[in-house]
Image 1 (spheres, rainbow, N blue to C red):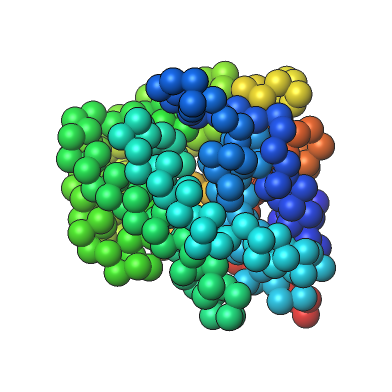
Image 2 (image 1 turned 60 degrees about the vertical axis):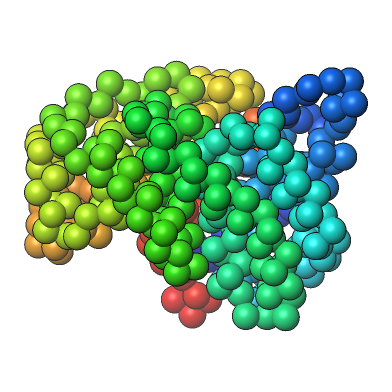
Length: 344
C-alpha cells in the first residue's frame, strides 16, 4: 500500500499526468461567447492548458509534473516531460493565455480555483534552478500576474466566503494563494488573503460539519481549519481550533474521520469523493503539524491521514473521470509526509 512519496509512486503519477495534459478531448470548457467569432476549441483558446478535460485540471496536472521533475532527478518520464513543456511553455503561448484571462468577459473565468492553482504552479516553477525550469518560470509570469491582479481586486469585494467543497471554495483558493505569495515575497497579495480569511472565519464557532455532499472534493470544515492554520500563529490557531471544532478530541464530528464512499468512479461528479478523501488527508496532515507531539490531537489527526489515504490512493488512476486530476491531490497529501529516497 502507498504511504509515502517515493520514486515508484512519482513515476506512476507522472505517467498519469503526461497521459492527459495534452489530451484535448473530451473537454469541459469555461468559456463565455459574445458572438459567433468566439466559437473556438480548447487548443485555439488555450495553447498551453488545453488538456486534462478542463483548464484547471490541466494547470494542476502541470503542477504535479513539475513538482515531480524537481524532486526526482531520475524520474523515467523526465525527458518526455521536458520535451512537452518546451513545446508548450513558451512566451508566445503564454501571451495568448494571459490575453484570454485578462479579457473583461473573463472576469469570472476559473475563479477562484483555477486562479489559485495557476499561482501554485508558478510558485513551483519558481523553485526550479535548472536552465529549462527558469525558462518555464519566466514564460508563465505574465499569466500569473493577471491572476494576482484578479485576486487582489476580487477579495476586498467578496463580502462572504464560499464554503461549499467544490471549485468555488474560498478557503482552498486562499490556502494555495498564500503559498504563492510567500514564495514570491508578495506581501500585498498575502495581506489581502489574510484579511479575507480573518474577516470571514475568525469568529466561526462549533462547526457542525454537515458533510460530505455528493459531489464535494474538499471538506468545508477541514479546509477552513487548514486555511486558518496557515493564517494564525500557532497558539492563536490552537485557541481558534478549540472553538471551531471543540469536540475534536472525541473524534467528533464523526463524519470528518470517516472516508467518503464512492459508488461509481465513471461518474465525474461522484468521483469527486475520491478527491475529498485525498484532500482531507492533506488537511489532516497540515493540522497535525500544528499540535505538539505529546498532544493527543496530533495522533488523532495523523490516524485520520492514514485512514483516508488507505481508501483513496488505490483509485488515483483507472477511470479518466478521476485520472485527469486525482494525482495532484494525492501528491498534495503525500508531500505532507515528505519524500522517501531510494535509500530509505
